[in-house]
Image 1 (tube, helix red, strand yellow):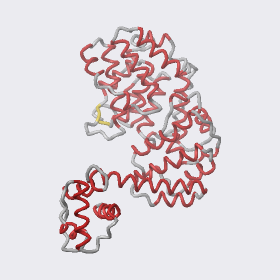
Image 2 (spheres, helix red, strand yellow; image 1 turned 120 degrees about the vertical axis):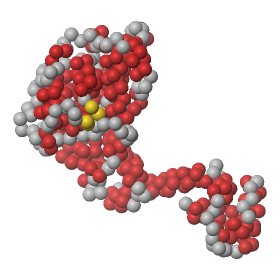
Image 3 (cartoon, rainbow, N blue to C red; image 1 turned 90 degrees about the vertical axis):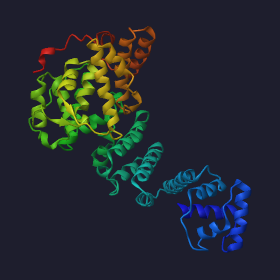
Image 4 (cartoon, one colour; image 1 turned 90 degrees about the horizontal axis):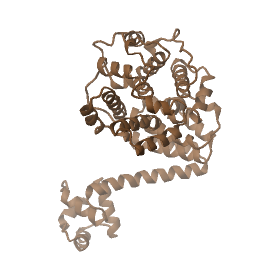
Length: 422
Protein backbone atom coordinates (compact mmCIF):
# COMPACT_ATOMS: atom_id res chain seq x y z
CA UNK A 1 0.00 0.00 0.00
CA UNK A 2 2.94 2.35 0.69
CA UNK A 3 4.17 1.69 -2.85
CA UNK A 4 0.76 2.62 -4.22
CA UNK A 5 0.83 5.86 -2.27
CA UNK A 6 4.25 6.77 -3.66
CA UNK A 7 2.96 6.10 -7.17
CA UNK A 8 -0.07 8.30 -6.45
CA UNK A 9 2.21 11.12 -5.23
CA UNK A 10 4.32 10.84 -8.37
CA UNK A 11 1.23 10.86 -10.61
CA UNK A 12 -0.27 13.83 -8.74
CA UNK A 13 2.90 15.90 -9.04
CA UNK A 14 3.87 14.89 -12.57
CA UNK A 15 7.46 14.52 -11.38
CA UNK A 16 9.24 11.25 -12.27
CA UNK A 17 11.31 11.37 -9.01
CA UNK A 18 14.54 10.10 -10.49
CA UNK A 19 17.11 12.24 -8.65
CA UNK A 20 17.74 14.62 -5.78
CA UNK A 21 16.49 17.61 -7.74
CA UNK A 22 13.15 15.91 -8.34
CA UNK A 23 12.85 15.25 -4.61
CA UNK A 24 13.59 18.88 -3.76
CA UNK A 25 10.90 20.12 -6.16
CA UNK A 26 8.42 17.54 -4.88
CA UNK A 27 9.12 18.55 -1.27
CA UNK A 28 8.27 22.17 -2.15
CA UNK A 29 5.05 21.14 -3.90
CA UNK A 30 3.91 19.10 -0.90
CA UNK A 31 4.69 21.98 1.48
CA UNK A 32 2.74 24.42 -0.69
CA UNK A 33 -0.29 22.10 -0.92
CA UNK A 34 -0.45 20.87 2.69
CA UNK A 35 1.52 23.36 4.84
CA UNK A 36 3.45 20.33 6.04
CA UNK A 37 7.10 19.59 5.31
CA UNK A 38 8.38 16.28 3.99
CA UNK A 39 12.16 16.69 3.73
CA UNK A 40 13.64 15.96 0.33
CA UNK A 41 16.03 13.43 1.95
CA UNK A 42 13.02 11.55 3.29
CA UNK A 43 11.61 11.47 -0.24
CA UNK A 44 14.95 10.19 -1.58
CA UNK A 45 14.81 7.28 0.87
CA UNK A 46 11.16 6.54 0.08
CA UNK A 47 11.81 6.44 -3.67
CA UNK A 48 14.94 4.30 -3.39
CA UNK A 49 17.43 7.05 -4.20
CA UNK A 50 19.14 6.70 -0.79
CA UNK A 51 19.31 4.10 1.96
CA UNK A 52 15.66 3.11 2.57
CA UNK A 53 13.93 3.55 5.94
CA UNK A 54 10.46 2.71 7.16
CA UNK A 55 8.33 5.86 6.76
CA UNK A 56 6.68 7.40 9.81
CA UNK A 57 2.90 7.45 9.95
CA UNK A 58 2.96 11.26 9.97
CA UNK A 59 4.84 11.23 6.65
CA UNK A 60 2.33 8.81 5.14
CA UNK A 61 -0.52 11.02 6.36
CA UNK A 62 1.01 14.13 4.73
CA UNK A 63 1.55 12.32 1.42
CA UNK A 64 -2.04 11.06 1.56
CA UNK A 65 -3.37 14.58 2.19
CA UNK A 66 -1.30 15.79 -0.77
CA UNK A 67 -3.10 13.22 -2.93
CA UNK A 68 -6.50 14.45 -1.75
CA UNK A 69 -7.29 12.08 1.11
CA UNK A 70 -7.93 12.77 4.80
CA UNK A 71 -5.02 10.66 6.00
CA UNK A 72 -3.20 7.41 5.25
CA UNK A 73 -6.00 5.06 6.48
CA UNK A 74 -8.42 6.97 4.24
CA UNK A 75 -6.04 6.46 1.31
CA UNK A 76 -5.79 2.74 2.05
CA UNK A 77 -9.56 2.30 2.24
CA UNK A 78 -10.18 4.35 -0.88
CA UNK A 79 -7.46 2.59 -2.80
CA UNK A 80 -8.96 -0.75 -1.85
CA UNK A 81 -12.40 0.39 -3.02
CA UNK A 82 -11.02 1.75 -6.30
CA UNK A 83 -9.32 -1.57 -7.00
CA UNK A 84 -12.61 -3.39 -6.41
CA UNK A 85 -14.49 -0.94 -8.61
CA UNK A 86 -12.08 -1.59 -11.47
CA UNK A 87 -12.63 -5.34 -11.16
CA UNK A 88 -16.41 -4.82 -11.06
CA UNK A 89 -16.30 -2.55 -14.12
CA UNK A 90 -14.32 -5.20 -15.99
CA UNK A 91 -16.85 -7.83 -14.99
CA UNK A 92 -19.77 -5.68 -16.18
CA UNK A 93 -18.03 -5.24 -19.52
CA UNK A 94 -17.75 -9.02 -19.81
CA UNK A 95 -21.42 -9.38 -18.88
CA UNK A 96 -22.31 -7.01 -21.69
CA UNK A 97 -20.24 -9.15 -24.07
CA UNK A 98 -21.87 -12.34 -22.80
CA UNK A 99 -18.48 -13.78 -21.87
CA UNK A 100 -19.39 -16.01 -18.92
CA UNK A 101 -16.03 -17.79 -19.04
CA UNK A 102 -14.22 -14.49 -18.72
CA UNK A 103 -16.50 -13.48 -15.86
CA UNK A 104 -15.70 -16.64 -13.94
CA UNK A 105 -11.99 -15.99 -14.49
CA UNK A 106 -12.42 -12.53 -12.98
CA UNK A 107 -14.13 -14.07 -9.97
CA UNK A 108 -11.26 -16.49 -9.51
CA UNK A 109 -8.74 -13.62 -9.40
CA UNK A 110 -10.61 -11.77 -6.64
CA UNK A 111 -8.28 -10.67 -3.86
CA UNK A 112 -10.22 -12.44 -1.11
CA UNK A 113 -13.39 -14.42 -0.46
CA UNK A 114 -15.42 -11.36 0.56
CA UNK A 115 -14.62 -9.62 -2.73
CA UNK A 116 -15.50 -12.77 -4.68
CA UNK A 117 -18.85 -12.97 -2.90
CA UNK A 118 -19.62 -9.29 -3.58
CA UNK A 119 -18.84 -9.78 -7.26
CA UNK A 120 -21.05 -12.88 -7.35
CA UNK A 121 -23.92 -10.91 -5.84
CA UNK A 122 -23.51 -8.11 -8.38
CA UNK A 123 -23.27 -10.62 -11.19
CA UNK A 124 -26.29 -12.64 -10.05
CA UNK A 125 -28.46 -9.57 -9.63
CA UNK A 126 -27.40 -8.19 -13.01
CA UNK A 127 -28.27 -11.46 -14.75
CA UNK A 128 -31.62 -11.66 -12.98
CA UNK A 129 -32.57 -8.04 -13.60
CA UNK A 130 -31.84 -8.46 -17.31
CA UNK A 131 -33.74 -11.79 -17.31
CA UNK A 132 -30.75 -13.78 -18.50
CA UNK A 133 -31.80 -16.93 -16.71
CA UNK A 134 -29.74 -19.33 -18.78
CA UNK A 135 -26.54 -17.53 -17.81
CA UNK A 136 -27.76 -17.23 -14.23
CA UNK A 137 -28.24 -21.00 -14.13
CA UNK A 138 -24.82 -21.58 -15.68
CA UNK A 139 -23.27 -19.51 -12.91
CA UNK A 140 -24.50 -21.99 -10.31
CA UNK A 141 -23.14 -24.89 -12.34
CA UNK A 142 -19.60 -23.49 -12.42
CA UNK A 143 -17.02 -25.56 -10.48
CA UNK A 144 -15.80 -22.39 -8.75
CA UNK A 145 -19.22 -21.83 -7.19
CA UNK A 146 -18.92 -24.02 -4.09
CA UNK A 147 -21.17 -22.55 -1.43
CA UNK A 148 -20.30 -25.27 1.08
CA UNK A 149 -16.85 -23.72 1.49
CA UNK A 150 -18.19 -20.25 2.27
CA UNK A 151 -18.30 -18.75 5.71
CA UNK A 152 -21.93 -19.03 6.87
CA UNK A 153 -22.34 -15.25 7.23
CA UNK A 154 -21.36 -14.94 3.57
CA UNK A 155 -23.89 -17.60 2.60
CA UNK A 156 -26.64 -15.67 4.39
CA UNK A 157 -25.64 -12.38 2.79
CA UNK A 158 -25.55 -13.91 -0.69
CA UNK A 159 -28.86 -15.74 -0.36
CA UNK A 160 -30.66 -12.66 0.96
CA UNK A 161 -29.21 -10.32 -1.68
CA UNK A 162 -30.26 -12.65 -4.49
CA UNK A 163 -33.44 -14.11 -2.97
CA UNK A 164 -35.10 -10.74 -2.34
CA UNK A 165 -35.17 -10.07 -6.09
CA UNK A 166 -37.64 -12.91 -6.56
CA UNK A 167 -40.28 -11.22 -4.40
CA UNK A 168 -41.30 -8.78 -7.10
CA UNK A 169 -40.32 -10.59 -10.28
CA UNK A 170 -41.25 -13.88 -11.89
CA UNK A 171 -38.27 -15.81 -13.25
CA UNK A 172 -39.05 -19.03 -15.05
CA UNK A 173 -36.43 -21.76 -15.05
CA UNK A 174 -37.62 -25.05 -13.45
CA UNK A 175 -34.30 -26.77 -14.15
CA UNK A 176 -32.52 -24.60 -11.63
CA UNK A 177 -34.23 -26.47 -8.79
CA UNK A 178 -32.18 -29.53 -9.67
CA UNK A 179 -28.97 -27.57 -9.19
CA UNK A 180 -27.43 -28.37 -5.81
CA UNK A 181 -25.57 -25.06 -5.58
CA UNK A 182 -28.73 -23.02 -6.15
CA UNK A 183 -30.65 -25.06 -3.59
CA UNK A 184 -27.88 -24.72 -1.01
CA UNK A 185 -27.06 -21.06 -1.57
CA UNK A 186 -30.55 -19.62 -2.11
CA UNK A 187 -33.50 -21.96 -1.52
CA UNK A 188 -32.27 -23.59 1.70
CA UNK A 189 -30.69 -20.43 3.10
CA UNK A 190 -33.09 -17.62 2.22
CA UNK A 191 -36.31 -18.93 3.76
CA UNK A 192 -38.84 -16.25 2.84
CA UNK A 193 -41.75 -16.65 5.24
CA UNK A 194 -43.41 -13.56 3.78
CA UNK A 195 -43.73 -15.36 0.43
CA UNK A 196 -44.89 -18.86 1.35
CA UNK A 197 -48.06 -18.10 -0.62
CA UNK A 198 -46.00 -16.42 -3.33
CA UNK A 199 -42.77 -17.11 -5.19
CA UNK A 200 -41.16 -19.07 -2.36
CA UNK A 201 -44.24 -21.27 -2.09
CA UNK A 202 -43.97 -21.93 -5.83
CA UNK A 203 -40.33 -22.93 -5.32
CA UNK A 204 -41.39 -25.17 -2.49
CA UNK A 205 -44.00 -26.93 -4.63
CA UNK A 206 -41.51 -27.50 -7.44
CA UNK A 207 -38.87 -28.91 -5.11
CA UNK A 208 -41.43 -31.19 -3.43
CA UNK A 209 -42.14 -32.82 -6.78
CA UNK A 210 -38.50 -33.88 -7.00
CA UNK A 211 -36.50 -36.28 -4.86
CA UNK A 212 -33.32 -34.42 -4.00
CA UNK A 213 -32.06 -36.27 -0.95
CA UNK A 214 -32.99 -36.44 2.74
CA UNK A 215 -31.87 -32.91 3.65
CA UNK A 216 -33.79 -31.04 0.93
CA UNK A 217 -36.81 -33.37 1.06
CA UNK A 218 -37.13 -33.07 4.86
CA UNK A 219 -36.62 -29.32 4.78
CA UNK A 220 -39.32 -28.92 2.13
CA UNK A 221 -41.76 -31.22 3.90
CA UNK A 222 -41.38 -29.19 7.11
CA UNK A 223 -41.98 -25.89 5.33
CA UNK A 224 -45.08 -27.23 3.58
CA UNK A 225 -46.53 -27.99 7.01
CA UNK A 226 -45.54 -24.60 8.38
CA UNK A 227 -47.33 -23.02 5.42
CA UNK A 228 -50.41 -25.06 6.28
CA UNK A 229 -50.18 -23.77 9.85
CA UNK A 230 -50.07 -20.15 8.67
CA UNK A 231 -52.97 -20.77 6.29
CA UNK A 232 -54.94 -22.62 8.99
CA UNK A 233 -55.18 -25.71 6.78
CA UNK A 234 -55.02 -29.33 8.00
CA UNK A 235 -51.45 -30.33 8.83
CA UNK A 236 -50.42 -33.76 7.63
CA UNK A 237 -48.16 -35.56 10.16
CA UNK A 238 -44.54 -35.79 9.07
CA UNK A 239 -43.36 -39.31 8.26
CA UNK A 240 -40.00 -39.66 10.00
CA UNK A 241 -39.79 -43.45 9.85
CA UNK A 242 -37.14 -43.49 7.11
CA UNK A 243 -35.08 -40.56 8.39
CA UNK A 244 -31.63 -41.06 9.87
CA UNK A 245 -31.59 -38.15 12.29
CA UNK A 246 -27.83 -38.34 12.81
CA UNK A 247 -27.39 -37.41 9.12
CA UNK A 248 -29.45 -34.20 9.40
CA UNK A 249 -28.18 -30.80 10.49
CA UNK A 250 -29.28 -29.81 14.02
CA UNK A 251 -31.09 -26.71 12.69
CA UNK A 252 -33.06 -28.97 10.35
CA UNK A 253 -33.81 -31.25 13.30
CA UNK A 254 -35.19 -28.16 15.01
CA UNK A 255 -37.64 -27.85 12.11
CA UNK A 256 -38.60 -31.50 12.47
CA UNK A 257 -39.11 -30.96 16.21
CA UNK A 258 -41.43 -28.02 15.50
CA UNK A 259 -43.51 -29.95 12.98
CA UNK A 260 -43.84 -32.98 15.26
CA UNK A 261 -44.82 -30.64 18.08
CA UNK A 262 -47.48 -28.83 16.03
CA UNK A 263 -48.86 -32.23 15.00
CA UNK A 264 -49.45 -33.17 18.63
CA UNK A 265 -46.25 -34.88 19.81
CA UNK A 266 -45.99 -32.81 23.01
CA UNK A 267 -43.50 -34.72 25.17
CA UNK A 268 -40.57 -32.35 24.69
CA UNK A 269 -37.83 -34.38 26.46
CA UNK A 270 -38.81 -37.54 24.60
CA UNK A 271 -39.01 -35.77 21.26
CA UNK A 272 -35.62 -34.14 21.82
CA UNK A 273 -34.06 -37.47 22.73
CA UNK A 274 -35.50 -39.14 19.63
CA UNK A 275 -34.24 -36.46 17.25
CA UNK A 276 -30.91 -35.47 18.80
CA UNK A 277 -29.90 -38.90 20.07
CA UNK A 278 -29.51 -38.04 23.75
CA UNK A 279 -31.31 -36.37 26.63
CA UNK A 280 -31.40 -32.58 26.74
CA UNK A 281 -30.31 -32.76 30.38
CA UNK A 282 -26.62 -31.99 30.68
CA UNK A 283 -26.41 -31.34 26.95
CA UNK A 284 -24.98 -27.89 26.10
CA UNK A 285 -25.87 -26.83 22.57
CA UNK A 286 -25.39 -23.83 20.25
CA UNK A 287 -28.35 -21.45 20.35
CA UNK A 288 -28.87 -22.11 16.63
CA UNK A 289 -30.15 -25.61 17.45
CA UNK A 290 -33.48 -24.33 18.79
CA UNK A 291 -33.98 -21.74 16.06
CA UNK A 292 -37.06 -23.22 14.43
CA UNK A 293 -38.58 -24.24 17.77
CA UNK A 294 -38.28 -20.64 18.96
CA UNK A 295 -39.68 -19.29 15.69
CA UNK A 296 -42.68 -21.62 15.82
CA UNK A 297 -43.37 -20.94 19.50
CA UNK A 298 -43.26 -17.17 19.00
CA UNK A 299 -45.52 -17.24 15.95
CA UNK A 300 -48.32 -19.22 17.56
CA UNK A 301 -47.84 -17.99 21.13
CA UNK A 302 -46.93 -21.42 22.51
CA UNK A 303 -45.80 -20.44 26.00
CA UNK A 304 -45.44 -24.02 27.14
CA UNK A 305 -42.78 -24.66 24.52
CA UNK A 306 -41.18 -21.26 25.12
CA UNK A 307 -40.87 -21.99 28.83
CA UNK A 308 -39.37 -25.42 28.22
CA UNK A 309 -36.73 -23.97 25.89
CA UNK A 310 -35.90 -21.18 28.33
CA UNK A 311 -35.76 -23.35 31.45
CA UNK A 312 -34.54 -26.72 30.19
CA UNK A 313 -32.16 -26.17 27.27
CA UNK A 314 -28.59 -25.14 28.09
CA UNK A 315 -26.72 -23.04 25.54
CA UNK A 316 -23.04 -22.55 24.84
CA UNK A 317 -21.60 -19.40 26.35
CA UNK A 318 -19.24 -17.84 23.81
CA UNK A 319 -18.71 -14.71 21.77
CA UNK A 320 -21.29 -14.51 19.02
CA UNK A 321 -20.31 -14.49 15.37
CA UNK A 322 -22.27 -12.18 13.10
CA UNK A 323 -25.04 -14.55 11.99
CA UNK A 324 -25.77 -15.65 15.57
CA UNK A 325 -27.07 -12.20 16.49
CA UNK A 326 -30.31 -13.15 14.76
CA UNK A 327 -30.67 -16.21 16.98
CA UNK A 328 -29.81 -14.23 20.10
CA UNK A 329 -32.48 -11.65 19.29
CA UNK A 330 -35.08 -14.36 18.75
CA UNK A 331 -34.25 -15.78 22.17
CA UNK A 332 -34.53 -12.30 23.69
CA UNK A 333 -37.99 -11.95 22.17
CA UNK A 334 -38.94 -15.35 23.58
CA UNK A 335 -37.89 -14.14 27.03
CA UNK A 336 -39.81 -10.90 26.55
CA UNK A 337 -43.00 -12.73 25.59
CA UNK A 338 -42.63 -15.03 28.58
CA UNK A 339 -42.00 -12.12 30.96
CA UNK A 340 -45.19 -10.43 29.76
CA UNK A 341 -47.16 -13.68 29.96
CA UNK A 342 -45.90 -14.33 33.48
CA UNK A 343 -46.55 -10.76 34.68
CA UNK A 344 -42.87 -9.95 35.26
CA UNK A 345 -42.98 -6.24 34.46
CA UNK A 346 -39.43 -5.35 35.45
CA UNK A 347 -37.96 -8.27 33.51
CA UNK A 348 -40.07 -7.34 30.47
CA UNK A 349 -38.92 -3.70 30.62
CA UNK A 350 -35.28 -4.77 30.85
CA UNK A 351 -35.61 -7.22 27.96
CA UNK A 352 -37.50 -4.88 25.65
CA UNK A 353 -34.63 -2.40 25.81
CA UNK A 354 -32.21 -5.04 24.50
CA UNK A 355 -34.23 -6.30 21.54
CA UNK A 356 -33.10 -5.11 18.11
CA UNK A 357 -35.44 -5.97 15.23
CA UNK A 358 -32.82 -4.95 12.65
CA UNK A 359 -30.74 -8.00 13.65
CA UNK A 360 -33.53 -10.35 12.54
CA UNK A 361 -32.78 -11.73 9.11
CA UNK A 362 -34.78 -10.81 6.06
CA UNK A 363 -37.27 -13.55 5.30
CA UNK A 364 -38.01 -14.01 8.99
CA UNK A 365 -38.34 -10.34 9.90
CA UNK A 366 -41.96 -9.77 8.88
CA UNK A 367 -43.24 -12.69 10.97
CA UNK A 368 -41.10 -11.79 13.97
CA UNK A 369 -42.03 -8.11 13.73
CA UNK A 370 -45.73 -8.82 14.37
CA UNK A 371 -44.83 -10.75 17.53
CA UNK A 372 -42.59 -7.86 18.60
CA UNK A 373 -45.40 -5.35 17.98
CA UNK A 374 -47.84 -7.56 19.88
CA UNK A 375 -45.47 -7.52 22.85
CA UNK A 376 -45.18 -3.75 22.67
CA UNK A 377 -48.96 -3.48 22.61
CA UNK A 378 -49.15 -5.55 25.78
CA UNK A 379 -46.58 -3.33 27.47
CA UNK A 380 -48.43 -0.16 26.43
CA UNK A 381 -51.87 -1.51 27.43
CA UNK A 382 -52.90 -1.97 23.79
CA UNK A 383 -52.87 1.68 22.71
CA UNK A 384 -54.82 2.38 19.51
CA UNK A 385 -51.79 3.57 17.52
CA UNK A 386 -49.95 0.35 18.32
CA UNK A 387 -52.91 -1.73 17.21
CA UNK A 388 -53.07 0.24 13.96
CA UNK A 389 -49.41 -0.42 13.10
CA UNK A 390 -49.77 -4.10 13.97
CA UNK A 391 -52.92 -4.35 11.86
CA UNK A 392 -51.15 -2.99 8.77
CA UNK A 393 -48.30 -5.47 9.24
CA UNK A 394 -50.72 -8.38 9.59
CA UNK A 395 -52.56 -7.28 6.45
CA UNK A 396 -49.31 -7.42 4.52
CA UNK A 397 -48.63 -10.94 5.74
CA UNK A 398 -52.17 -11.97 4.75
CA UNK A 399 -51.97 -15.36 6.47
CA UNK A 400 -55.26 -16.56 8.03
CA UNK A 401 -53.44 -17.46 11.27
CA UNK A 402 -52.93 -13.76 11.99
CA UNK A 403 -56.58 -12.97 12.56
CA UNK A 404 -58.09 -10.58 15.14
CA UNK A 405 -58.35 -13.56 17.48
CA UNK A 406 -54.57 -14.06 17.20
CA UNK A 407 -54.08 -10.48 18.36
CA UNK A 408 -56.61 -10.64 21.19
CA UNK A 409 -55.71 -14.11 22.40
CA UNK A 410 -51.93 -14.16 21.94
CA UNK A 411 -51.09 -13.97 25.63
CA UNK A 412 -53.94 -16.25 26.72
CA UNK A 413 -54.12 -18.99 24.09
CA UNK A 414 -56.77 -21.50 25.09
CA UNK A 415 -55.42 -24.30 22.93
CA UNK A 416 -52.21 -24.81 24.89
CA UNK A 417 -51.78 -27.71 27.26
CA UNK A 418 -49.37 -26.67 29.98
CA UNK A 419 -49.28 -30.18 31.41
CA UNK A 420 -48.12 -31.67 28.10
CA UNK A 421 -44.47 -31.14 28.96
CA UNK A 422 -43.14 -34.24 30.63
